[in-house]
Amino acid sequence: DAFDEFGNEFEYKVYSGNTWGFQDISDDVLKKYYSIKGFILATVDKKKIEVKKIFKVNPNLAVPLLKAKRDERIKKSKKPLRRLQESIVTGDLNKINAEKLL
Image (cartoon, helix red, strand yellow):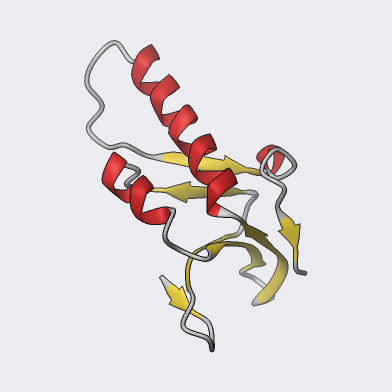
C-alpha cells in the first residue's frame, strides 16, 4: 500500500512485464479495494533501473474485473484452489479505463 500527500491510499504493483499480479483476492480484500483511491500499475526495466510506464486505475472498474476473473477460475477448477490470485494484464487496461500517467 502507498499513500499520497493528501493521505489517499493506493494499491501499487510494479512488474518488469505487462502483467500485474494480485496474490490474495478474497471477498474481504476485494471489498477493501473499494475503499482505496486507486491502483497504480507500473512497468519497469530492471536492468536499466528505469520506470517505463505508469497507469492509474479506478477500483470501481478494476475490482469487478478481478472478481470476474477469479470467479471464472474457481468455476473452471476441478479442485479447490489453494490461493485466490489473479492478474490485470495489458489487454485489460482499456476495459478498465486505465489512465496512463507515464
